[in-house]
Length: 324
Length: 312
Image (cartoon, rainbow over all chains, first blue to last red; front, side, top):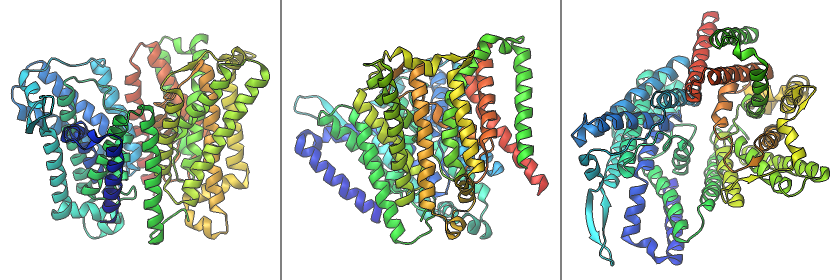
């Protein structure tokens, strides 16, 4: 629980600082908005977490999300879909399939996952843009637009404008809980930790490494597909270049949340807090009227500091550290 | 093993040349496309060499592109205001000095604070890009000194100057990696860091030097880049980042360290350039070229894998 505790302390301290500069920060409206706008990132990070715990890494998730979203978009625009549940499941299925493609390549080539997923990032995204010419999709059916406006709680602010807790935040948190349950209580989840902790030991214990790969990359792909649905809902326009390029954002949020690049450690609570931390910084800086050029800088500094602290503590624990 | 892999690459290169030659009716071999390739290739080539050295040591440097942009912006500040020879040389030296200090920062984080290279350089990448954005406020600095642009667009005896710069760096890197004690220890460290440490080698210094080397080449690439574009900006060339990892792996550099060399990487860069120029001539989308690069990489890895498996 250590990393989560640190994150929580930093979160509270930062929130107080931002509140001091702009009391609007703690308004429910702002908090709800912030959570809604980061639901996409939050869901992507959950998938990346599972892959990181297994000792792998997936940088193709953004491309998977883009492809999944685009296929859904085409079906929507051509009026093949009339049900939000089916619409939701299409990108999930596409993501699952593409994630499994990754898993198969990684397992059979025995090459570091970062290399394979860089390749598949190029393949998925390149083919998509080539086939679609990068055209934007918009004017979706009304059921698709209506769903995006659903709020679980609806309140009215002082100016009489209604606001609320978006359904996407609930979906994000539900998926977080689901991921946590799978990782903590399901045998496959424990196997993911075991594989990340020591691949050879996991193999000798009789685990099918291939099946674990299929699960981790498939699950991450499916979550990326779902995240792309959320992103399309929020923006109501599908631009093929909107998501690709954010792969390092996802990785940064996961690592800030305490997921280890070496595998075997990381928790759902940690990465949710990591995502919220990045969200709070972006939001707080905006409320402090600090120009957006500073955001990257602040997040970069924070990332370097966080990584240093985690690693220094690790070194104190005298676990295997190569560069000593 | 090493020779056979280079052979695979050369066969791939040869067949690509034949295919592209046939498809473009020899258009890829005319002076204009060769000239074009000779101007485009050095930038990816320099970045690939900058990525190769840390990868041989078992690490990775994700900050090369943002380092190049930061160096470019700093130099462009001077170059957009003054055009005399002294200022040009001074601004280049200033840029290279900045690149060196970036390398020291990366190296310190990795060697002395024990942060894994991928995390440390991911952090500094965000950091340098942030600094670049703060300095430029997202604007482009353009209109650089005429005489400086020669570095990106000029020719010497008909050979593009950026190509000469690239060849110079290739020779220097080859010499360092193959003919100096430092080069040999990088390979040794890449294949077994613990053994290297216990053989009494100062691994911290080694890692520090490796990342300095990488950043210095990235800084030089930054200067070539601003000279080619006649402008500097915080986000130029970002698509090169993953591409450099791709060229390195295609060139035979193992992501786990200890393997690969300059020759393979240069062949890989040429392969990528031929695909890209060929697609351009065929008026095919550059995104299809990206997809093809990914397919080539996976294909080469799988071929390599099956070949080594047979030998074992």
